[in-house]
Length: 262
Image (cartoon, rainbow, N blue to C red; front, side, top):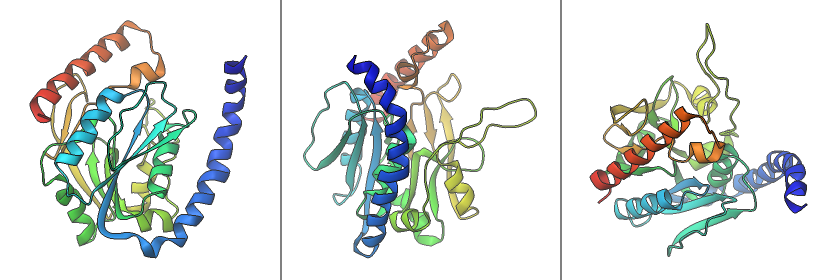
């Protein structure tokens, strides 16, 4: 009975989240724009039952970033218990509000000059990653990060000034349209932000891919992103192809941790 009630309430809660909660928090963020910690960055990631990947992300970000770097984990109603780390802020949502909503929430709550988003199955590859990622923002770019396809910065590794995100009322809200005959896909998470800030974009393009497809992508020697590490569990796909792809992603993740994160 409780689960049925929760399912019925979810559409209403999602509408209230987008129409009431985020706009209210954005107004508060506008008021504190002048008090953002200059020169510092917050790394925001969204977690949903991905503790294995989250441990690696937190560990590598802490080891390979300046000591002033903050980490904010937005947990989208996970059923798994989460590890705790000193100095890492974890915001637990009571239900899964979606990746785009959680990203908006995390960025709006930042109190540093810069904000970086990393997917939970991504992690930095070396100690200069953050200075390389933020450097373009100090020399004219408004958005910096990974480019997988099309002309936009993918939120698996994305950076911007917090003040600009808030002031320009940016949002990661996705209106994704899959590829169809005669047209490419569009409206992916973060794509609208890049479109509004173009051409002031700096891309770290694909340097290598383990495969199949996008699995195990390295962007500019800067950041590794596994791709699909949590997708199949989240979507409950049950086809043979989905199970094969999930196994590929899991194997690629284990290889990457041994190769890049030790």
